[in-house]
Image (spheres, rainbow, N blue to C red):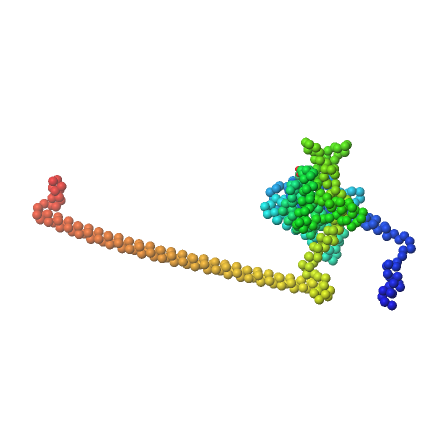
Length: 435
Ligand code: GTP
Ligand code: MG
């Protein structure tokens, strides 16, 4: 008897199993719901959009509350990513414990180098995946208690230009689409006319396709929501209007924007797609967004990260990989890396010392040549002074000689005068002066 035949004989082939009465599998959905409700769950939204485009207002409108937010300046040198988490006390609806994190991109699109705007966002997303992975890799992990901050939905706010997407929009969405579920929305849709909006949406969808940007599509595999999700997919990107102000319409207070020419109601489906966004994001597809994040985006991150760490499912010759071998291989790699680094640092140190030595030698030579120059200058000066002194001495000697000669001549002249006149030379000189 073959193994299959044995199994069949024992009733091991599931196709031959027959239930003889109601067993109760149909209670499974209720069990799952109860478990989820009791545990509570995390849902994290990332808002990407230029400063002042209406991100905070849409979040307030979505959750019918006022989250903390401050208007941001347009002059920030870099983009920063800030996260705020709201728990049961703020958001409890019936007995569902939702822990919501809203992540904001502060200063997005305000820098001269636009591409630098994207990096902090990517880094933030990766960091949340990394945190989850680290928890998963722990020996004593507690994923049920772990605060899961992985981004489940990225709402990308497109400026209501009516023209087309900006290059920053495309660059950013291209980098984000393998990491998160992107739901693009046209912000401040009340500033674009209805016919323009239809054209604008078409152009955006074409541009996204042309640039291979993959946006999130509402799933159509569950028949209960397939039709609705398919029709919603065709309306993407949603054109939304947000407001924090409420006005009374038909005896009811509703969020709206009041203009001199009329009132735009946030939740009026003739005025915008806001209700569709809320329906799709919160009511119908929140669980799918969470699952896609876990099974697609996080899985991709995890795969790449583990490969980077040196893990593999099998060796080149198709043998299973032992964890010990991976760690040993990584340890050897790490040691080699450390040795190379150490050698580089040693070389750098030697180079630095040599450079300093050369500098000192040069300074010493400079000093020597300066000293030689000074000595030469000093000797030259001394020689000049000696020459001058000699000349002066000669001049003095000459002068003294001349003086002595003049005195002798004068004495001689006086003597001569006395012998001729018999008068004293003084008198003779005086009589001469009188003349
Ligand atoms: P920062 O956080 O400073 O980057 O701004 P933000 O993107 O959060 O924009 P915020 O929600 O603070 O709105 C900025 C301004 O736009 C406010 O004056 C809002 O009233 C206005 N605003 C928000 N939503 C809309 C909208 O749908 N239509 C129009 N016309 N204005 C809006
Ligand atoms: Mg804001």
